Length: 352
Ligand code: ATP
Image (cartoon, rainbow, N blue to C red; front, side, top):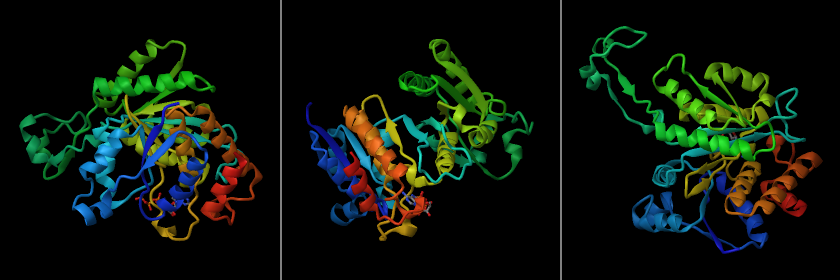
């Protein structure tokens, strides 16, 4: 296989403590993989005066994918580029229980679903402003029945749901459901009863895509009902597609079902690029202690290996993680163990 290039940004606070041993594990797989390290964030500001210099962008462009540790602060500019610049419209957040995970649920067995979050639109177009700017619309709200100018002083945010953006994310969800071994089901989550124009449109377009894929079961829930079912009966879900904001919130909640954000992997896919970043933050409160749980970073690495064509190694990595959890001997403190981050990664590498 041709050499694949990965751009690596190690991230901030405790994130590099998970990234470094995981990169070592990837390196030791002896695959045709090269790792390049664009300089972004504070070190880039210190050296060239910009948080996201052209050289870093070129390195990301030249790579097959980017592997990103969690960031805070000035590294954000590179994330913006990876998301909106590279049009990575599908944020994929798997949530799968395996034996040995310290889940807060009495019965987590069988949890295996994926949240497919639209990643570029909805409220995240970030068009906000003063309500006075919209006075010209002279249009009453369906509920308030008052023209906007009569609402008084305040702000607005635009929620944009486009046909193109919705079609491509729902299609992505259906293609994913076809590949998965589980139930072959896509669930759409919106608040269409309240937001008839925007979420109503998302659901309408989703139904059109569903009609074109009759071999896959399709159902739909209102987001508040879904939130309840997510906790009460998570086993019933397979692939769940939703607009950006609900996906952002509920995928962290899904991480909570497994008991630790340290288990939540994430990948953002576009038509010709993808970047991979664990779903958790930078865990500043445990930085410097080498106890950050590397599982999310490892599962994220496994998604990346699959994306660049190393399916077999991706599966081996996941099996090794499962084995270490089932053994229960080498786990980090958030999972009730006393292992350090490098020790847990080494145990997983040995199990591969
Ligand atoms: P951000 O704003 O970057 O999301 P945050 O502090 O709000 O940061 P996290 O960094 O995700 O959110 O941390 C939330 C809590 O979960 C913290 O107590 C942190 O230590 C813990 N945590 C997050 N990731 C991990 C991990 N991989 N292993 C162990 N604990 C983690």
